Amino acid sequence: MPLTTLDPKTALIVVDLQKGIVEIPLAHPVAGIVDRSAALLKTFRGLGLPVVLVNVAGAPAGRTDAGPGAGRSFPDGWTDLIPELDRQPDDLLVTKHARSAFARTGLADRLHALGVTQVVITGIATSSGVESTARDAHELGFHVTLPVDAMTDTELARHEHSVAHIFPRIAETGTTQDVLDTLSDRR
Image 1 (cartoon, rainbow, N blue to C red):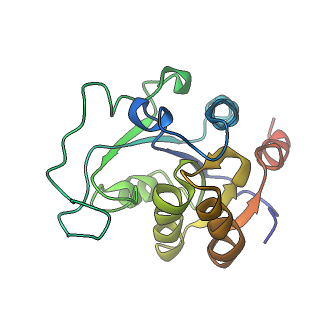
Image 2 (tube, rainbow, N blue to C red; image 1 turned 90 degrees about the horizontal axis):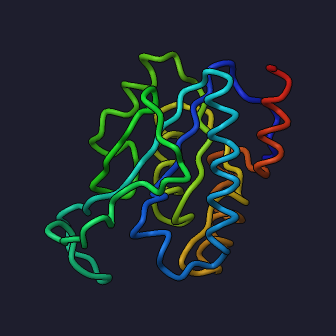
């Protein structure tokens, strides 16, 4: 469903824009994903709306065909948020050990305490961290908006599958500019 509106208390969630992830080969140029996320961050902060910066520092313990779960180690700096996010003191920071920013992090309670009823989600990877966070947000009763030009994946087919087949069932989608235009009415 295309973007129709944003609730008065909407939070921006930026997923896994961290040094170790932005350096891997991605389906879309990472600079564009970072620039569009940064534009949203600037606008949300300027309007006094909540911002959540998420990094991933592990995985659940369960075995998968794709490799080991918990216990994986990362090189120094791998989990550091990229400087372009310009972390601010009021930003909520979530370090996750699963795909979803809501999995065992207390994020839903923190957002509810702030009166948040809607989330806008950007980041990497579309079919993993972004999709899992969006699914959980939807299941938890948040309205979800996904600016699909502010996310990417390791494979274009995975990104396209999420955008075409998963997102329409759990969210409104659009572009970064659609979100910014909707927010401009609040200035």
